[in-house]
Image (cartoon, rainbow, N blue to C red):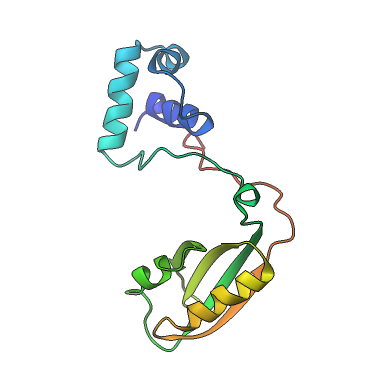
Length: 146
């Protein structure tokens, strides 16, 4: 990746609906050349997907929690089990006292409690420790130029 690619990715992170003509103008390329660069970034896996950033509260998922999951077994093969819980937005195998860290978005704290119960149904899960977020200062994507 060169500086032009990094700038294209940064521009797309700000607004993925920008036209190739606009992207090209920002980096000194034609629309066709910008399109080809973005196509290669997609084909190479640098750009994994294009998505929409939606307010979770608007979808009825206003409670955010990070949950440390303790286990009695290796959890590295449990991705599908965690993905089967729709409120789990992210799941990461981690080093430390816990085995997995999950990001959960639920409608209410009662629904969060239900999610915790369902996590206990995953084979190997022996405990959870949830931290409920009261306020988010900011969330940001990776800056490819940093």
